[in-house]
Length: 252
Image 1 (spheres, rainbow, N blue to C red):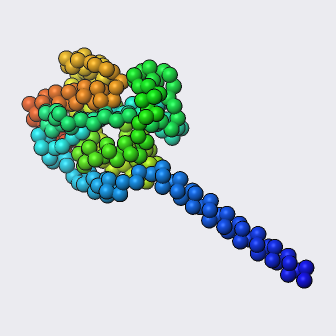
Image 2 (image 1 turned 30 degrees about the horizontal axis):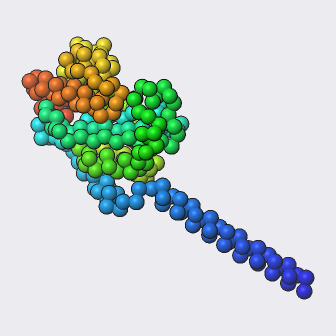
Image 3 (image 1 turned 120 degrees about the horizontal axis):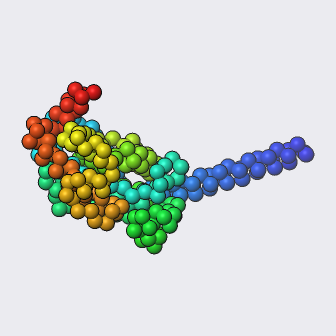
């Protein structure tokens, strides 16, 4: 009889543990679902953009190639150590023409940025607190971009954060083609290799610097820089990305 009671107690304990684990699993699943973007149609479009972005566009003339110039403001330099995206600014271009359509959103921070970062970017803690979460902002950004080729100044920084955020928030690999401005200027302005920062490039090419370290303003200035050099490239006989790649290969 004692053995039977012992087994009964064990069975009850096991059942309680199973029930507890199910409840815990349910809570965890609900939390995960709440933290993920829940717009199924946006996710479906994003997956389509990913596939389309992998198509070969190297031979497409600059005058016909849809491109999006963008900039990220971030809380630091290391996404793997907790730094995050604070704002995204972007403008569309085609060839040497900058389109009027633009994108700008701030991001609700998981970790509040330092005062130095807020001072540098002009963002406020309240503004970030009232913003959407990064997953939602990312999907909106990809809706704006579509399958266009991306351009950024010193693109390694942007690539690092987009790769990290796209994987962490959307569970997908970043697949869009991302071109650094130096990819073009190393051909069209090789004699000005000492120029590094966006401010220096803007000054050299008569681009008015406004609201520096504001994501949209920086994207607009970078777009002006890129389109100026696309015009220079065109006059020099470079008409598409493939032409630039071939010239760079020769220089190496």
